[in-house]
Length: 302
Length: 203
Ligand SMILES: Cc1ncc(C[n+]2csc(CCOP(=O)(O)OP(=O)(O)O)c2C)c(N)n1
Ligand code: SF4
Ligand SMILES: [Mg+2]
Image 1 (tube, rainbow over the protein chains, first blue to last red):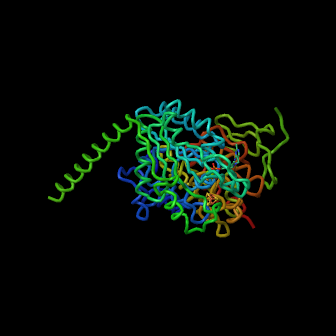
Image 2 (cartoon, chains in turn orange, brown; image 1 turned 120 degrees about the vertical axis):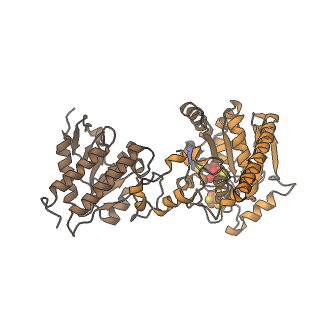
Image 3 (cartoon, chains in turn orange, green; image 1 turned 120 degrees about the horizontal axis):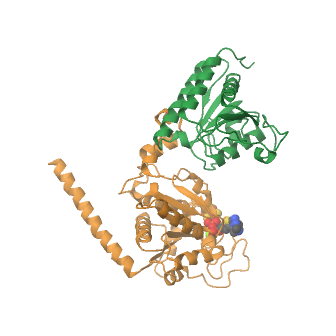
């Protein structure tokens, strides 16, 4: 998909279901300034979702899809789990991979896109649960990072296997008892952000999805760094309210409680020197772009 | 390889075999197939037009390859598909209802589709049952999704399936063309016009 292809044939326009007409007319494909603030005023790239009511994964999806720098040139790779129920409802190309294989699939995909579309930017973004990223897919996750593959890995960390009813995951906290893990976890939460840094990721962030502006920033940084330099990793706390016994309205508070400075999802980031340089350059360019836009606006008004 | 298997109206019930596995071959250029038997393209044109004109709810299902104007060829095909639909609408009697229902993409949106306005390849039977569609034509649907869908239709409904295929044809349809172009779709519209009034409408 690229921008010029998101066009309905005129003779077919009126028979297209309204959500597709809306996507073409009011979505933010191709808009350089797209971001979380478009939510509510533009057509979102997520139609409906089949997650539990109030599941923070749905917020995370909305913020991420609103923040992708070039959705028309992005392919997402998902894996089995609660997230995979959402992908059928998003307006972005995506591939469902066999559970755990997501980073291997993304590797081949990114390389193929680079060969197939030379000179064009194609972003690949993996989005999978903690079970897929850290347990069953750990080999694929790490090997992609060792190889310096140029794509972003996002883990929706809900600290267990939610979709299969609550089994223990490597990212679960020590001592936690889940519906299908009655003994309680006997070892510490795996320190994947630290492992990511040691494995060669150039940008690593561990946080919750309580703040949409923060998610926009980290998504944009992660994708731009992956384009230019190498692998990036975001670990986002999206609590499974169903499994921790919270109701629909309590997901946000749960995230806020877990991001306090002493808590496990206090904001942490790692940026390699190379990535820091790129971000500084990008910030300068962005400043210049905005200033230029302002100048142009002023000259039009004058 | 000779075969006694025929690709006929269903319901063939749960898991109908892939027609290819039963020995059904694809047509060569200039040909089509009817129920698995290779025929000339003209013969297939006439038979398809007759199926349309004798159905209660003859329906065209355009897929993403013609719904989206992703290149000039696709846009021309969309014009031709619309023309075929308008011709069909003008050629059926008042007891028949021609329909044009899109398959905008292949996302398995189960059970969320609205069968009045769209068809989804993963459960095409919902749209066919809801609108009581008894003859349909696929056009602009990618091969794999078309085969999947055509088999589901054969399995669970009694709808007659026609494939206006842009590649080598569909053995899982009851009638298939190959190498579809805008011109070929227009030619089918001409056949519909030509046979208008000469085909017994449904009771
Ligand atoms: C190869 C394979 N093994 C096991 C499963 C069963 N399975 C489905 S979802 C799931 C757990 C998903 O957990 P996670 O990745 O944390 O995602 P969540 O549902 O928590 O968002 C498992 C083990 C599968 N689908 N495929
Ligand atoms: S089971 Fe948990 S993670 Fe999955 S949709 Fe429900 S609340 Fe969200
Ligand atoms: Mg999980």
